[in-house]
Length: 302
Length: 302
Image (tube, rainbow over all chains, first blue to last red; front, top):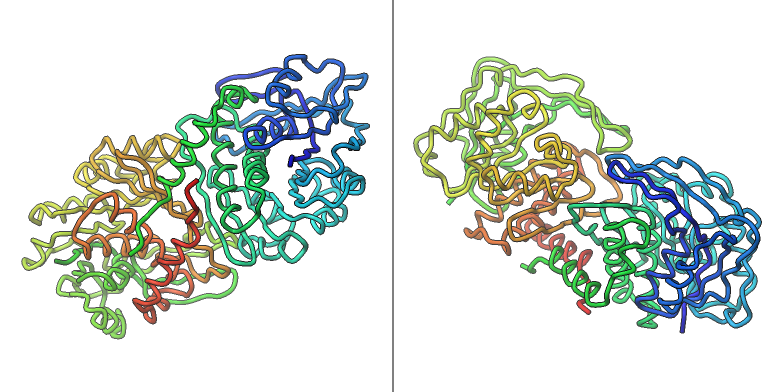
C-alpha cells in the first residue's frame, strides 16, 4: 500500500514579475512526494548531489517519504532556471544544468519492487521503461511527460504509454502528440494506445478527464494571487494518485474525486514559491477546498 | 412577461477551414431572438433592408418572435464577413458593410416599453443608452458588448454598465476593460461599477459567473465537430436570459442554471452554420443536453 515515484529532484531558480528565488527546492519527484504524502505512503527514487540541502531531507522525512531509493552521488544536484511572464501560463526556461541527473540510472530497491501504484514523473521515456523493466507488474501505472520527449523520443514515449493506465498530459502536449487540435478527439485517440484514462491538464482552465464512458471537467480553482506555478502539474498528479491509492479502487467515481483532489492540491501549491505552501498545508485545509470545488461547480437539476 | 432585445440583424459571409456560406442569416438580435424563443416571448428591435429574405421573417414568426419593432427601410441589410482559423477560437473580420445599420436609431414601440427583461445585444453603447432612455425602468437589464466599444467609446459603455444588472463579457474583453489579467479580480472590479452579476464567456473553456457571493464555473460542452462558432455568444445570452425570464426569479440558484442553459444552447448553435441548428432544435434536446452538463461536471462529496 504505497506509491513509487521516479523523477527529478532539483534546485530551481525562479523569476516571476514580482519576485525571485534562487536554488529553491523543486523537481517533479520532490513536489510529487510531499504532495502525495497527505494521502499515502510514498517511496522516492531519484538522485541528488552532495550539495543537496539537509533540510530538504528532513522535509521528506517529516512527510514520511521513504528515501531508500534516493541516491546521493558525487557532484551537483540538477538545476533548472525559469522566468514567468505577466501571464503566468507562459514561461521561458533560462537554464538547465543536468549535473548528477545526466548519468541517472534509476535503481529500484528490492523492497520497492512490489509497490502497487507507480507514478512515472516527467523524465526521459527510456528511463521510465527502465523502471518498468525492473519491477513486478504494478496494479496501476500513472505517467506524466513533457513536450521535450514528444519532440525527441516519441517512439520510447509511445512504448511507455502502451503500458500506462492513467496518462497525465497538458492540452498543448496532447495536441502535439496526437496531431489533433480538438481535446476530446485527442483524448479518445490516446485511449486507443493503452491508457484506460487520460487526464488533460489545462492550466488555469482546469482539467479534463476522458475515458471510454465519457468526459469529466474540473475548473481551475479561482485564485486572486498566483505566486509561483512551478510544480503545479506534479502536485496535481500527487493529489490524484495519492487519493486513488488511499481509496484503493479506481472507478469513474473515485477518479473524478481524484481529479478534484489533484486540482485542490495544485491550487495550494501555486500560492507560494517552491514547496513552501505544502510545508504548512493541513488535511483540514485540503478538505475545505475540496468542498469549495463542489460549491463552485454545483447547479440544480431542472 | 417577455424579453426585449435590441441588436443587429445581418447577412453573414462565413469561411471556415472546411466550408463557406454566403449571405447567411445572422446578427446578434437574430441569434438571440430565435434562441430565447425556446424559453420566453421575445420582442425584437432592429433594422433590415429591402433585400432581407422573406424566409427569415417566416423563421422569426414560426418562433413567435414579435417583430413589430423590426424596421424595414430602403437599402441593403447589414453585412459581415469573417474567416475562422483552424483554431476556431480565432477569426479575422474580412469585411463589414453597415448599410441600413449605419443610420439605425432604435425606436421602441409603445407596447414594448414596459417589457420586464431587456437584453442589450452588442451594439454601440450610445444606442444602448438611447434604448434605456425610451423605456420604463425594466426589471432586469442584461448587457453584451465587444472590444470595439471598449476601444472607441469606453465612457458611454461605462454608463451602460452602471445601469446593467447582468453583464455578459468575454475573457479578453473584461481583461481589456478592467486592465486586469486575473479574471476573478477583473470580475470583482466590474461588480463595483453597477452589475450585480458578471458572466465571463471563455469560449471553449466555458463560462464563469462572478457575484458578491462567489464564483460558479460551467465548462464548454465537449464537441468533436464545431462547424461555425458565429453567434455562439448571442445564443449563450439567449439561453441565459430566456431561462431567467421563464423562471421569473433571479437568484444564485436560477442564475447558475441559466448559465448552463446558455452553454447548452450555444453548444447546439455551433454544430451547424448560421441558425440552421436552432431551426431543428427541440425542447427535449435542450433538456437532454442540460442533463449531460450535469453528468460531465458531477463528482461525489467526500
